[in-house]
Image 1 (cartoon, rainbow, N blue to C red):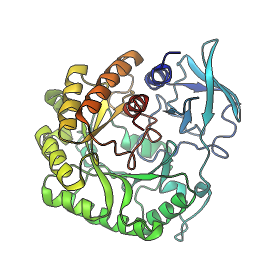
Image 2: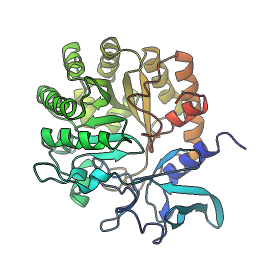
Image 3: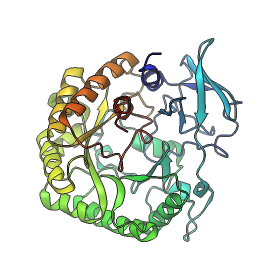
Image 4: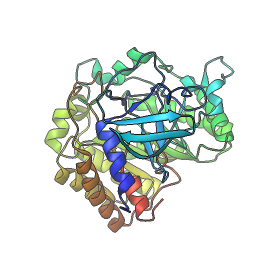
Length: 380
């Protein structure tokens, strides 16, 4: 059997999208975990009024993000625990929707639905977008791939601004269920000092409700520009930090991320990552990319430079999301993503960066391939 079979299949599913029969969707939103659009919409098309699975699992444990595309040749059929993934008339393998967390049915002391505050990504990552806002949209300078504002207007399925005590309460419930292993927090782009203060309050609430002295997981803040700011994030009690660089090639970065690149140069990102490694420790820092919008060569240059600093990489597989400026475009073929990811995994292994799996793992990554490739090398 091809050892890369499920890696290749996941890449195809992310690049081409997927369909599901009405019968297969019957338990989604009740027994199985549904999409709640905590930040972006990753589907190829909107689906207001239809509950879709957030993600699903392949037979080897690979987690795949569900990206609806009515034109995709891939489809999930069946019902309940008897689901089959097919391509056209050819049955490929079994598939499993992921169970719906119990806390999705609960409310906080402030009478807010918990699912509107924090959602489980993949199998074990508790996600909070503490403020669904990005200042770049106001000046029509948002990143070309981003549909944050459109997603919020289309679905209105989460609270735009979350109370810090509510976030802590949700974290306490989610961790108590025993499946969540780490958190991922982000908040769009806004004033640095206000964001640091907000994150400090959030982390205090999470630590109080979970009992953690340091919380396993990652914060993805607005680009930090100095050692003092990064140290303040470390002092909040989060174990890891990441910076959303998006694109390594400098000219493409400026073109694809016009607002962000005006405020934060690639050099600033690199310096921030290097400084963060000194503060958080090797393996506890991430460079985050949108993979598929730049040539393989420049992307791998970025992977090489970042891992040589002792940081890890999280490359999300791009798809042309509705509401973004790149809606209707096409991502590279699945084979391109596999080939590029496998080369990236070699770079990561050769650099010897600690895996950081206590903060981010393959079960979190329904929309990325690198953790899956590293798992094939025995790094889980």
